[in-house]
Length: 43
Image (tube, rainbow, N blue to C red):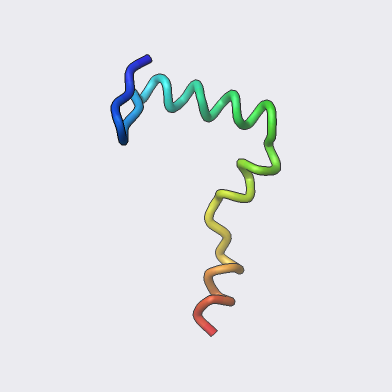
């Protein structure tokens, strides 16, 4: 693992994402871009 004030190594970011997906998949899913949300914002 390596990180500074604003960055993670690619491998650590992948590992962290996997841990989040396993422990709280709904939270992670909500972070994904949602095309329907974008259309609503444009109205």
